[in-house]
Amino acid sequence: MRILPCSPLALSICLVSCGTPPQASPPAATGRYQIQAVSPLAIAGVTVDSTAPGSNANALVDGNLASAWTNGGYRSTTAWASLTLGAATALTSIAIKTGTSPAGTGYDVQVSNDGHSWTTALANQTNKTWNLETKALPAGTSGKYVRVSWHNAASNPQPHFAIYELQAFGAAGGPPPSTMPTSTPTPVGTKTPSPVPRGVTPGVAQAAAAYAAHASFLGSGLRGPNGLACDGADNLYEADWNGNTVTKVAPNGASTHYAGGFKGPAGLAFDKAGDLLVAQYNGNTLEKVPPGGGSHSTFFTGGLNRPVWPAVNSHGTVYLADYSNNRILQITPDGHASTFKSIGSVNAIAIDNQDNLWICTWSGTVAKITPSGAMTTVASGLWTACAIAWCPSYLAVGLYGGQNSHNAQVLLVDFSGHRYTVATGLDRTSSVIFDSHRALYAANVGDSALRKYALQ
Image (cartoon, rainbow, N blue to C red; front, top):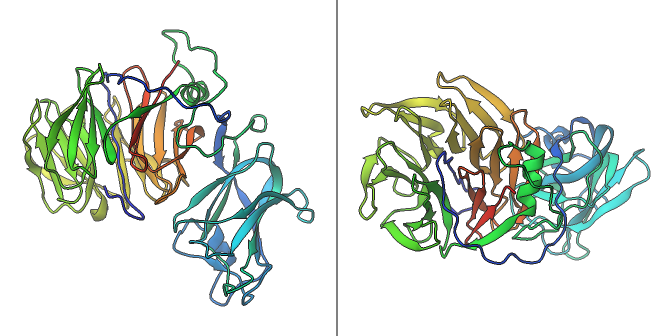
């Protein structure tokens, strides 16, 4: 795990009970959260004003963040690119990578039903990072066409406009979305959904509504909260990336130092003996902390290159996401290590109650891998996915967003790939985890905070 541009981050799943740290008073509500299933919309066509030699308009939608469409007009003031959808659709957001915007440049996001009459949904937008950035559209936005129109600087104009990726997102069925949230680092909904009866498992949409409406900011005291884990005594453990420590938070909220001296601690997981496994990203080792904390020793090294997350199955086999080696490593209880699956940019892994792995990659894939190694893609297009947690009804996925930005999100994703918003406007989500009551915790390295989303 690293806190750098294009950083891989990670998370784990906890299948045992976690404690509940004392809640700070949440800030005032800032708006109702959109909780419909939101998916990338199918693109029927791409139209651009012009194309530079060697460029291709299809680069806008090819899923490759390294390729770009570039307009052909030198220092043009009217460059634009348009997506044609299959039909007029309720739109919730766009995802766009343009690179950083020099002073005086920017773009408008416009929509149209006929491709001729355009309505500006967002004006004077800029991208602050080289990552894919999400731009939420106002409530009620709809159209068959989505266009990005460039504003070039009047002084020192830029020679060309380039877009590396452009996607439109909308509700996957159902009525148009209600009010979208404003960007805020602490999402708290104003409309409280009906309580979930005890003993009844809520559906994914109902769960997302409850999480969004019951959010609390929990000050962790860490300088860079990262990986999260729980033990069998309701204690929560947090890896501190900047402090190179692991902190233990008891059910009554008391916080104590558990272990230190790490080199970039990332993901955490407990093994069957109660030892805490710590993926040491900068040290290229998997460390082991004995029950009670204090010292730690190297459990495995074996040519690791930026390991980000461990997970342990019901038989004691350890799986380790080895980011820069593009693999998931399998370490059996007798110490035999082998590559379980070769996967590029795998950021996080979790294990369900059938010993299936659930993974997410920085490039945006969420997938299930069976114990035999068969892999099925559940969702794609979730760029900067860096955290995943499993419960029997849905997954939680954290999107890192971008460096020094508030584009991070926490989503619920059902097993058909539909996604539901829990929180947006966060500052670099690095880990998510469920407790045994399905309360959802999210660590955010950008504002050094832990947040709890209660299922009520």
